[in-house]
Length: 408
Image (cartoon, rainbow, N blue to C red; front, side, top):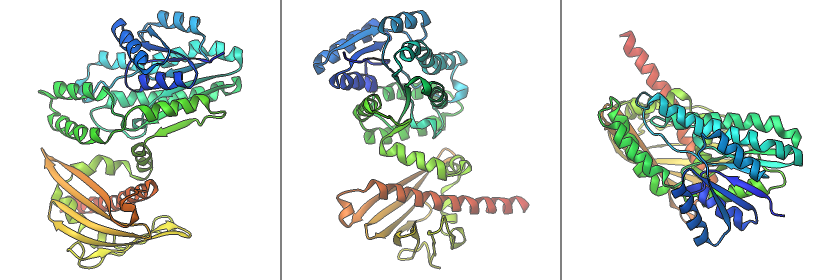
């Protein structure tokens, strides 16, 4: 007999991709949507995909309806996927909107788990999969309430996993990076609506620009659906699955980049950032771990000058001979890094003042060697880590200069 799985928010995006994938894996799938129209859209979509999925209507804040549905289904697996963005500065989002979001994206998933657990405990097995986000670790502006719900859902998932482990029930957390779904269309509309007349108009505009730049790089929902399938079929699923290269890089950066740097990097002027970057005292010679040493030439950052770090641990050492290609003060710095034996990579720092803030764009890509054709993900993460350490040193020197100016 096929195992029965309930998936919430199944009418589009990650939820729709998930119900289709799970049905193809042989599960008996029920997908919930919040209205009759959306349930009809789900029925049409799964029919076109050629799979058998039972659509149901479920408003997540309707506790009685949730109890009736779970009592009827007694699912072996539960996938809590439903959610929405609710974009805007915290001071611009009405408290009642925030309360509804917390109810739908934190309380409702836990309620469904509570309702499903008695049958799972009776069977001695079951799976609960909660779809969170990498933003549970990496917090930014304008999506504070969304990120608050994801932080809370991740914490609740970790707690629940430890509480029910002895019952044979596995609780799994899925943390995707940027996934291109219709959720971003609504986010763009909310940014434009709430930004009109807000005292935070500049951050709203910046968020829109970031969204427009990032969305073409996002992947579709299929990798997340496949990961959920893995979480439901693996004999011993992992507690947490991070989906997407961007999510893995952000997860690492969140561990190594200090919070003051994250908060202040965009607040400095281009002149200040490049003045610090050009000062050899910022990164003259230092060690991270046991194998990262930098030496800046006296002429740095003039074109042709460079710095020479060694990055790695033990025998895994990359020797990096870096040369400045272009220095357009105070707007742009471009340099080539020869990470032998892998690649020569070009990095460009571009800065643009935006209404009192500075927008920083970092671009890095291979320009020579076999890596120009096959981009190694591990090398990509190493490059991000190198830049993070450089920026940490720049921040320290900038703070010293600010203190000196305050004394004067």
